[in-house]
Image (cartoon, rainbow, N blue to C red; front, side):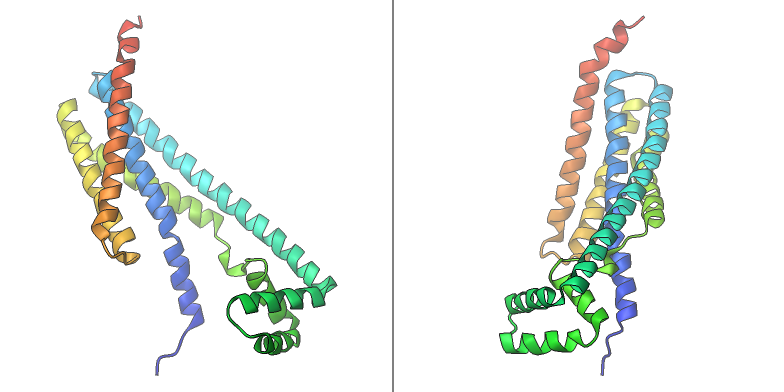
Length: 242
């Protein structure tokens, strides 16, 4: 007989929650670097200048994304904890209001009034259980939703760096800017298609995982095309400068 193991399930959900940082970081790293390479290739002819700018963009982007993820998770955690404290104080001051609200919430989920009353009465015998249930059912808050700011920041920064290397490494392997750009964009398209196909399609069990891969691919090609056009548009400014 199968037995649910809450601790193992909680750890699994926490790992799956990190997919957001991984996908966002890789996608942003790939698209940002591919856009920089495409844009500078249209505006600058010197391969060394393009590489230097792309490397600087990669370093700045990884640090910025990591710091942003850290600050965002920390702020979100502090806000949730503050709201949970307020909700718990409200439950202590007005337990009957909380019990009635919990009855309404259970009724909306299909539980009869009589059954809901028995549940609330049972929960009221254990204040901690009542508070935790009220936080989830009434306020939509849960203590398990707290993220780890340091882990999110490091994960986001590394994911961005890994994504940035996808178009950068092929570009560095060729002496020709044009050939390197084609190789970098080709690798970018393949990786983004793979990310969309495997993570969004397979893990999320979409009926048509290829659609997710194509969507990522379209985003990559669109971003690269826009960057290249912008580079061509500003190239006269660079050539006119003394």
